[in-house]
Length: 276
Image (cartoon, rainbow, N blue to C red; front, side):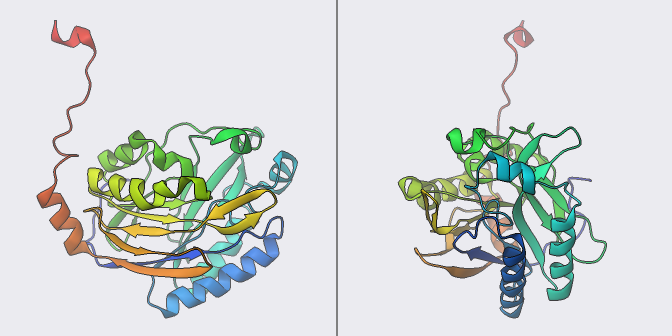
């Protein structure tokens, strides 16, 4: 897939579905995804973003992750694509992915209806024992997909806490980064502070969709957030279930890139011998 955007950007309305995890009940999660997609589309959204590992739940253990993991074109993808087509909205959702040799990844996928291209992403930075006991770490990725003239990339939760990941997408041409997340209240600063900084320093919009509630012994902190490319918070959820709807404007993206030039002026590191 080409990383360059061919179409003029149009304003893009995002809906972030902040909800409690429903572990292990994939059918119920697909049903409520359909309801959330319908609500989001009725409010004018073109993209719906769900939390990390939405289809199966996140804190479900290695055995359940392996049992429920699917290929990127498996039945989960087909079911979500059908919802996207029925409701007329693109959907970014989290799920466990199994590759051809049996590795299980914490993955996210952005799908559109009909035969429009999709984007699959595997988490590259694993957070603590919870991630490492369930998943393999994926190689670094910088693929993008185009939607309404926006070049869109994906990260998953802990990935956004490493500045190199968002910067890599920005250097590849990203305009918007979607981040399905399962973050805890001890790390509220990620939503309140780090996400706006990632947006500002890379001149990209960022949408950070978190869970709210508890899953076994893990509690999630909500505070799902959307920032424009100037780091301005366009909307932030509270600690409750909600559908956060915000519009990222093409004009704001262009203005941010006129005012800030961190990506354009970045000096890449060189090997010491290069100056000899």
